Structures are given as C-alpha cells and as structure tokens.
Length: 139
Image (tube, rainbow, N blue to C red; front, side, top):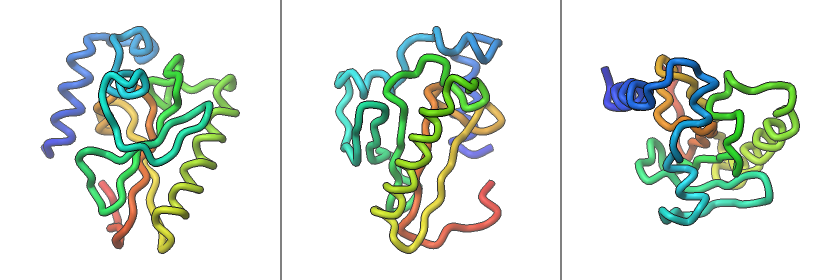
C-alpha cells in the first residue's frame, strides 16, 4: 500500500464517522484552516467561490489544488446534490483555465473520493497536475 493510500485510510478512520454525509460536521480540515489564513499557502487563483494553491508535496512539476471556499455538503464529490451544480461547474471551468494557463502542453484533473479513492482531506478538492507527460493507467 502506498503512503498516500495509507494516509487516506488513516484519515477516513480518524474521522470516525461512518456516514459520508456526517463528514461535513467533522472538525475543520487543513483546507478550512488555509482558507481562514491559519495556515499559509502559495496561492495560484482566488475568486468569490474558490481558492487554488500550490500543493506542498507536489506529484508533478505543476500540482495545484482547487477547493470551494465553503465545504458545506461537499466533503466528497459523492455527497454532491443538484444544489451544487453551479459550484461544481464553476470549479471545473476554473480548473480548466488554470490547467491551460499553468500547463499549456496538457494537464490532468483528479478528484479523489473516499478511502478507496485515496481521499485524505474531506473537503472536496481538484488536483491540477502537469508540466510533464502523465502516465496511464493512473492508479
């Protein structure tokens, strides 16, 4: 098991909540703390709905995380409802814009969901990776 998978499993277990919908009431995540400026970050983009910053442990020459500013209801993509359509569309458009800007030769978007998806932070986030040839299959 890779370190990231082990970290994701430990994170899911540490939350201690079995229902995915309960994860939104879990304590503040590292992303909530970044948004509150309690933890510094290297910003890549910000608007009224989302914030993008460079990953502190990049998995590619370019590795940016794009997060919604409000976690409510979106600890995981699988928790999304029809009420989230506009925000999810906005996140995808901004991810595409950032990808084109930072990785003009191409990029990959990744959303991890749940323990089996290797999600380690329960606040929806999109990884934007590029700056090198991506491999296939990814996982």
